[in-house]
Image (cartoon, rainbow, N blue to C red; front, side, top):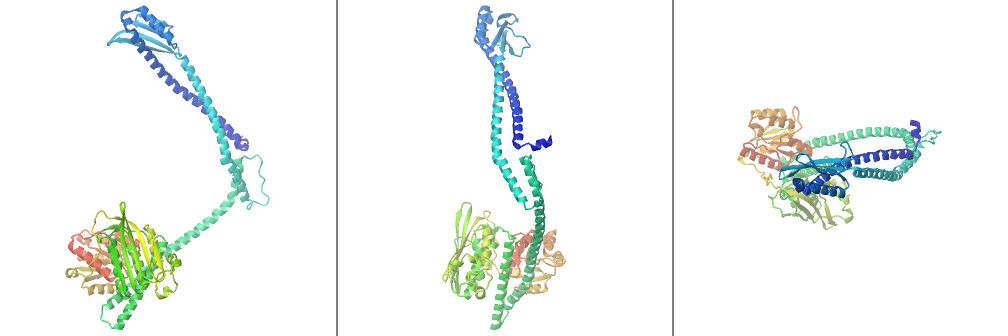
Length: 623
């Protein structure tokens, strides 16, 4: 039987199923309709009997009271004559004595009649009763006809639907199945043996398709084995990429640590009385070190962007103050080249927005740095304008310079990493050609785009627009301004936690020149012990140290139960990624200074936190 069924075509199977479904559904639908119709009939008959009773009782009440039997019989005969379905009416007085009747009384067990009995009352007093009988035969015949109509209609609809479904299935399923089967057979031809087993003639469409799929299975198993090997190779590549990322992070730390010593030493030397030749050599070495650091930062930033390791860190900031800070970095360099560096903003310094200040500062640094680099003399102007946009503000930054300009055909290429508009620029001006590419990627993350207009020999205009939401809470702006410690701040002890003797020397020398009282600890364990036994108003904490690293040390300090746990802790490390910054903030650090140390930035941070530590009883606050 199974073999016979398997050999049947889909058309015969489909026809059998449609017929069976039609019979079952038609019968079921008819019976369901019958049940609902009977319920409806019972309710209709009850309502009709009650209607007859109301009409007759109101008509015969006076005759019942007077027992006018001839008139009662006349009314009842007229009622049964005008209403054929009303086959029997009986009226009795209050003593249950028959007064009048019309029609033939039905038997009590008749299923074709419905009876209704009710008392006749007037002003709350019973004067008799009435019995009515209604013939249901006509209504039952109507129900049977309706059920038959439903069955015929259901059967016809299902058959039409079945035929339509078959042709639709033939078009959408069976024909494509046959085409798929032919394609599978053509694919399998390359892997079939020299003398393949012939296909039986009595197979159905699905059986033929199943045979083709089975034949293809061997090919797919071989393909799956190839994919498994590719997956292993992909896993090895991902591990290699992870190792590369870890290597880049390690190399960043290892390079920044000696760079911190070099730049720190040069900063200290510049403050010493030196000859003109020595000052010139110091400036040269410092500029070369800063250039090396800038190129290192560009390479690391692009690597993180390329690996999607960079995330946005939104905070409250002032766009105007951020731009002023960046301009201050390049003001001395611009003055040396006789460049007039101007700034204009229609946003107040006190107006705060929510955004990633670090990324915006990095973009402005790249743009202004390029402008200063490629402008021999002339002007550089930075303008900031804002425009309301519903509950946000569109802020446009426009940088215009009178530098060497860019040829029109080269504008698109300068946004490609490692590409400059002229290959000779890397030798003449320095740089790796990555600043604009990094800036464009950062702007894309923030929903912006770098626009460039330039004419060769006449200068360039760089602009971008960001949509930022204003800070509605009007929180305190933590812009750091003071770089000169007060006499009172100089008396507040600072704990420097640093495992490198060279870095200790550089940081301690810098701080001592400004009169700060500095104690040192060589690792996190020593730092925790020092905090427990002494009062410090600020901790400068390295991260990578033996015995206990800076993150664990900060966590231990924050666990202390006395007031010493509220000492401000500032990370001072060569680990400069966004992930490292978030890790520092997550364990309770208050601020972050990147190595190589910028002397002015370090003084700003120290003066800010010493001021809070001196004024507040609980200065600890995460930025």
